[in-house]
Length: 173
Image 1 (spheres, rainbow, N blue to C red):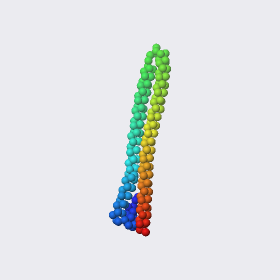
Image 2 (cartoon, rainbow, N blue to C red):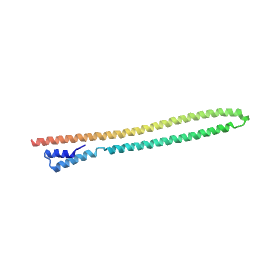
Image 3 (cartoon, rainbow, N blue to C red):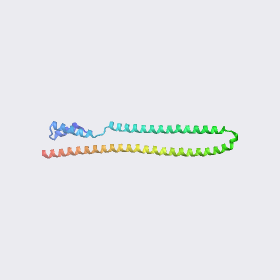
């Protein structure tokens, strides 16, 4: 962190007036702190990211729950049809066997369809997670860029101080 009191003292020691030293120290402090990310900024960014992720996860969980409920209803309907089918008359037993066979094929097709839907849903969730990860990476890059600018300002301040000191030494000698 920038020690403005020490900086101002150094400026006064090389010939700056107290007003000049304080003004330059204040300006340098303002420049450095205006571009520096605080711990609070980082915490807020993390919290915002966490909120987005929680909302996304909640939405996905809700969709999975809805899917489970609708699948359970479909299975209950299938079971009811099978039960009704078993209660049919003995005279139609041969026809019933044929219908059962057809029904089994339909159920197999439905299972295959449900499996495809689940696979598609998994892919959609994976894409959503990829998007969230990308957003997190972008936030991290933005934070890294801010840190780079702060380092450049620190270097410029040091260079300015060294240059000022060199000019003052040259003027005083």
